[in-house]
Image (cartoon, rainbow, N blue to C red):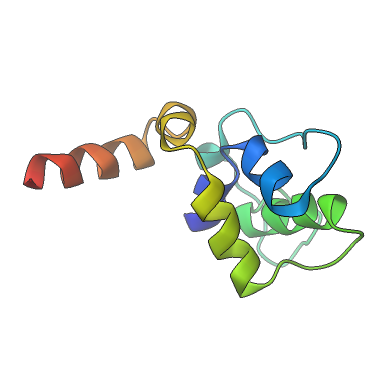
Length: 97
């Protein structure tokens, strides 16, 4: 699920990698799916890694890269683009407080 959420905000990739062009992301990242064993499939982790590689000279993302992209993700964009899973998570957390 985390990779799906990280695929919500193209600007987070721009801020982290400094890419010149806005990366193309799935319009509804939380509903993409594919074969975990096929790196060319729409499995969320594979899509995330491929976007990172396109933004970063074919380099795989690091653990710190995941964290930095998450830190740069606009929660309003994430809330809108992942209206099933993240919206519910966000609303549930806010209702606790």
